[in-house]
Amino acid sequence: MMKFLAFSAALAGFMVAMPLQATSALFCEGCTSAATAREEARRHAPPLHCYSPNPDEFMTPENQVCTSAAKKLVLANPNSRQLYTFLVGHETSFPWSVTVTPAQLSTEQRDNYLKTIDFYNDFKQAVEAAQQQLNQNSFRHPSTMVVPMSAEQCPVNTALNTLASPEKMSATQDWITYAIMQNFQGNVHTYFETGARLNSVGITIAGTGGTIAWNERTRRPYFIQQYTESEVPFDGVFRDVLVFEMELTGFSGNVPTIRFKVDDSSRVAGHNLPSFRGDYGGLTITNPCVQERLAQLRHVPGGEFRRPDGSPSGFGLGGGAPVPDGGGGSLETCTIYFYQSGRLLYVFAVPMGQC
Image (cartoon, rainbow, N blue to C red; front, side, top):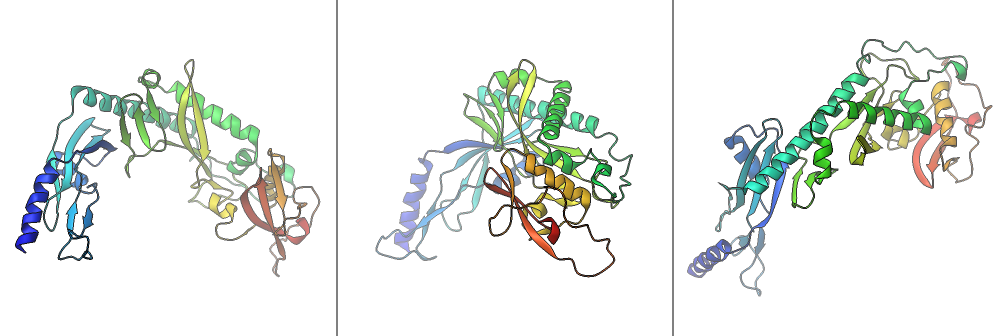
């Protein structure tokens, strides 16, 4: 035991001299005081590295020694623009409890982090204002869609029709971009020119090494485009929506260039995208309007339908069996796979005569 205590004491002196890990920063909307920020900091302690002091012995709870390199952690509340900075590490003896002590930032570091917060807030408010502007009538006109007798009667301004039409998707994204640009009120353009970047990791100020990463409640702004029309009747709860992940990639003059990606939380024709992708098995499609919109995918560049055996499918080429009227009886279906440029995107089932 004396040998172990002596080793621990020597280790304590060693840990004091250990270099700190690089400073990391996280957004933290819940950090509303030094106390709440301290509790949040405890959740981000550096990993412990434990080993046996004697290489000839297996590590056990009795003989293990644990070390960690303390890190400087910055927690940034985007609402208050408050920064909380700590050194987070572990005690040098069992039970190696987490330690959190206040730390300081240089004036330059503080200015860069505040610039990052302002960039996030300015871009977020523009997205929220544009979203409200484009969706202001979404809850006033519930869909009264009834199953049509022909494809010509299918609604046009729907999430599924947008997803299946490259032209409509491009127009939607252009309109979202324009609305966001019209709602810029801060210094987004200026910040971008000085190196601010928004991506899946967080907000980065190029050249400074400073990044504030997303953290649970504070995430990259998404754009939710709601639709008042759908191929299926509105159930009174869930509306069709396209949810876009967005990455600001640059500016052309004052016009932002944004990379869009449709998120899986999107809902089209009463189903989320994982359902269409076949995550839960082939989704049975009998609604003629949904079938009509899915058939449009054939015209997407690189789009093709295949049967389970890999052979080409005739789905979407016209004709096919009539859709059952719901009068009972079993429905014989076949599975259709939709590929785009060789990548499987959607799996669904349709009446046998339409395969």
